[in-house]
Length: 252
Image (cartoon, rainbow, N blue to C red; front, side, top):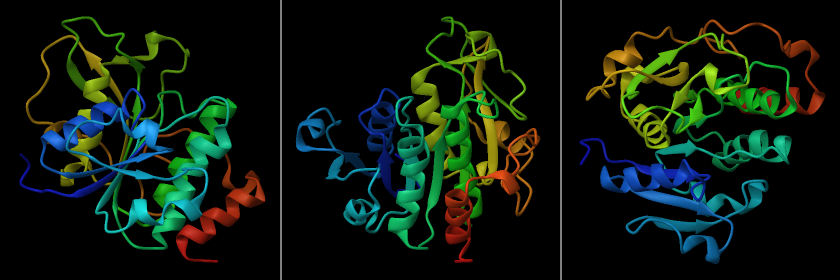
């Protein structure tokens, strides 16, 4: 049980990472709320979690999902609808919150700074989170469950420097991704950190505080993560993205 019980919304709760987050959140004693598209999806949610129906691509359906939450964990993703899902889910939850502050843990991907449509829309979702003024941690995991049995040491990098698009960029267990996302909600050393998450040879750490604490925080006012390459100029973004950034900043 955690000493910092929260009401946590899980976006992407039925996915391969989201299911782990839901299970671990319940085990930690959080009031866990899983966003699902319909009642049939709700049947697969871990016992002890509340389910709420909503469409992450439609902000008007998310009022119940965000009502009274302290935190939100995003584990969603789509290669078929990158703008509507990878970016839209973040925008729509922020719209539904209407400026009410919450703690955010956002999962994107290792290699998010590479120029691919799916990763660029994930990166724009990251930028919305940073611009929103909420306290956050952004986690960019490596390849899921490609790690060897003795490859369990949780390692956090910055700068998104590994861009081969293969497991050589880094690997990590799904349950460890869920742990890092969930731990970040209550660990002040994780605040305003953007990180690539991989596993190295060695045992898993009991305390992730020092691992988070060794990271450089994102610069105040920056749209990008600490040490990221500046290769997606905000001045060249589509107008709809600029408008969304202005809205979450409160400039619109």
